Image (tube, rainbow, N blue to C red; front, side, top):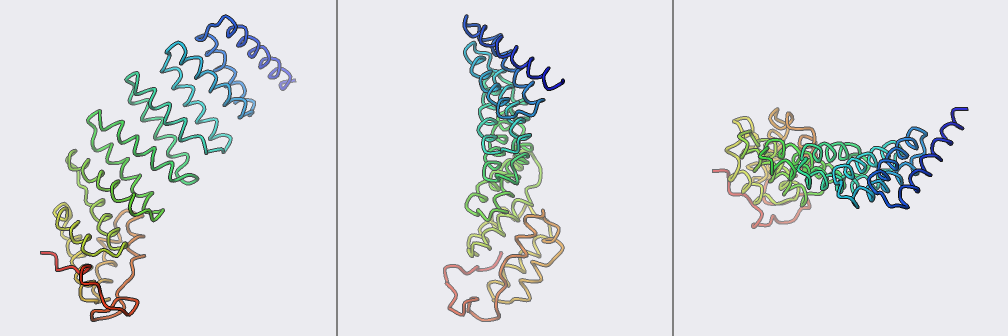
Length: 289
């Protein structure tokens, strides 16, 4: 009986929509499509629900109801979540956030981007990175650098999980800059940058990171980094392990502490690398001071 009632109500909504579209009256038609989308969602007919919400977006755009159009895209994101179909979430969230920003609703834009990024962080991490970057951009223009830093930090840590080193570096650099602007410590991001350069095998770049940004880190980090870099310089596995296994490194954010565990240790003493060849002089570090 309840199914028949739902079916009847949906037919009435659809007829009302097309009556209004024939005039055309886009604003009320958008309202009707929105109601139909909600009804289909409750009935767990997710594809029909999404189509209705997207039709509502088109209607609201015709009459410049940009905020309402953004809300319909927000609804479409949640329908995709419920349907466990995540491939369109990034697109809908990006479009909706842009609409909210257009009408000076940055909080609504930020909420949509954050929500969408969390939904797809595991299933589509590359898309989540882009959403976190857009979230940072959204709040940065509102003079909220520490919030922007949080989002760039999330993007950077996802990159680390994906071993996308070249994409992680600018994300963490942006986090450092935002935290410096906001007066908070960028130590975690600094250590992440250093570990990434070491994982890439570029100890010269790692030392440059430390010379530039190491002052933001505390004494425990400094001692650990000194052991790590000098150990690599001297091919001293024990010294490197002393640094990488120190509490300062183990207490880093989970993604960075895992990265430290994955770093290759020197095979022994002398100027040979782990493959038994000669060390590249251009990749040696000259010390920290």
